[in-house]
Amino acid sequence: MVESIRPLLAVLVSILAVPILLSSRSANIREAWSFVAAGLKFFIVASMVPLVLDGGILEYTLCQVMPGAAIQFRVDAFGLMFALVSSFLWIVTTAYSIGYMRGLGEHSQTRFFCCFALSLSATIGVAFSANLLTMYLFYEMLSLSTYPLVTHHQDDQARSSGRKYLLYLLGPSIALLLPAILIVYHDIGSLDFSVKGLLAQGQNTPTTVLVLLLFFTYGFAKAGLMPLHSWLPAAMVAPTPVSALLHAVAVVKVGAFCVVRTLIFIFGMDYLHSIGLATVICVLASITILVTSLIALSQNDLKRLLAFSTLGQLSYIVLGAALLSESSITGAMVHIAMHAFGKITLFFCAGAILVTTGLKKISQMKGLGKKMPVTMTAFFIGALSVIGLPPCGGFISKWLLAIGALEADRIGFLVVILLSSLLNAAYFLPIVYRAFFCDESECAYQGPAREAPVWTMVPLCLTAVLSVGLFFYPQPFMTLARLAVRSLIGG
Image 1: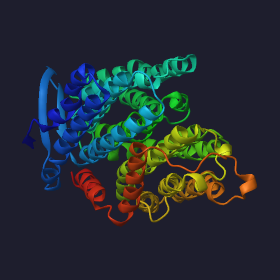
Image 2: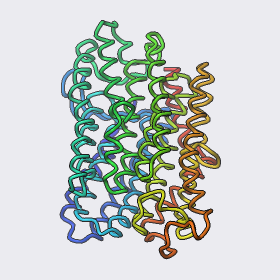
Image 3: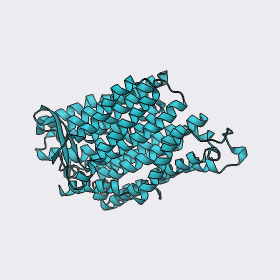
Image 4: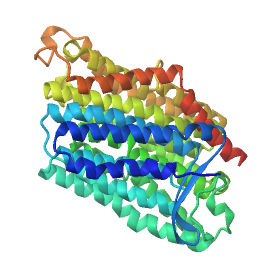
């Protein structure tokens, strides 16, 4: 264990940037400072990689709230992997936001970039949380800082979606998570994450099952799993960079991260095995995977299709963690990264289409590949990654999940993974096919052939290329995930 202030600095960088963004007198200065903060955050996070790869763990205690409950940061392999993805994609999304917000002439751009910065600080805070208290505080900070982003347009639909967003995210925290934290603290006297499971350190009491139920329901709401999922499609009223942030980096991805943290580091693999809850979680995750894939098939709005796709993809992460085999947990962790690059590419493409053509409906995009070939090629690559086909990184994580199902001797869940991938292909590939291969008479879009502005195009091309690159070179994330799993199994 190494005492270091770097985890705190990684959290504080974008918070400290907010006053500068608010006082910036021009858009150029504001956007330049956004890049500086994003780059500095990524540099600090990346600087911790060598120590963690050597088996080290960084820790920093900000303050001791009460005995056994501190606001404390701890950087392990799993948290670092998530922080690397989040901090890097913040740089890319900042660039994309410039092209998108300027291209559509969006209002309140200063508020937009400030809330963006706060949400990324909260995301890194969750990634580096050493205990339940710290995770809780930063997740609620994330919910509150993303609310203005979801309601950015300030119309009736945005306000209605915002109310649902807060209800589903803050409601479970107050009604479920806080009681669970209090019970854990009362029974154990500590809130720290443990590789063997925090509850394994004490005697199992009748309240343990209650705690499990509270955490279980809370995690499903945060990760957007059925039946507590409706807030996520509703949040699609937000600008596309916000949707990309919600789906690829923050909120639902943080929710899935928290579910994995809670299952493994609070209850522990042995305890979940002993009570059979892992099977229940696998069944519910499988239902979400299949049902959301079927719903996605019927969607005509591109962002809503991507929203339901995300719900299914996050359930892969929960399924992998609940299978409790070495390969499945590794696959769940790696899928956080692989899905992030594929899904953010798809959302970037949806935004580029909107900026250039004003189109939102899939039925209006026939022949669009002939007008925007680069954008639709990037969309194809992102779709391949989410489906789990080579040569994209999503293939690696889904392969590990499938192997993990075999290791756990759960053939039924292997069938779910394979069937859902077919459903993914069924709702993504026809979009690409109709965009490139339709007669001129069938083309729905008859506008000029042109791509989106450069600030919009460069990020989506970069994430598409990286989605392919992660197929050939997945080692950065694979190494961290395997290191994390080894500590769980050997710890």
